[in-house]
Image (tube, rainbow, N blue to C red):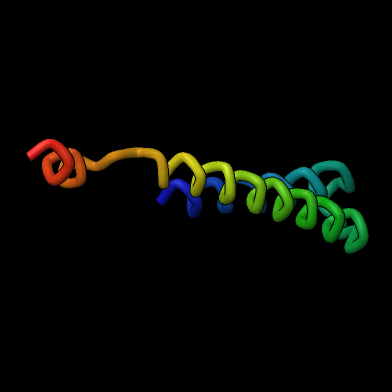
Length: 67
């Protein structure tokens, strides 16, 4: 869920910023650059969050470890 929200925010911002800068006109080169930057940020966040998720111990895992 966290990744979907981040993807929506990043890509939506990339599109909106391009449209606002060009007064509603579409500049395909700028749009491609902004979406590429958003995807790079999303990949970075994915690997950062994946690393933290592996370290977290769920209640079921804690129960198995300490019982």
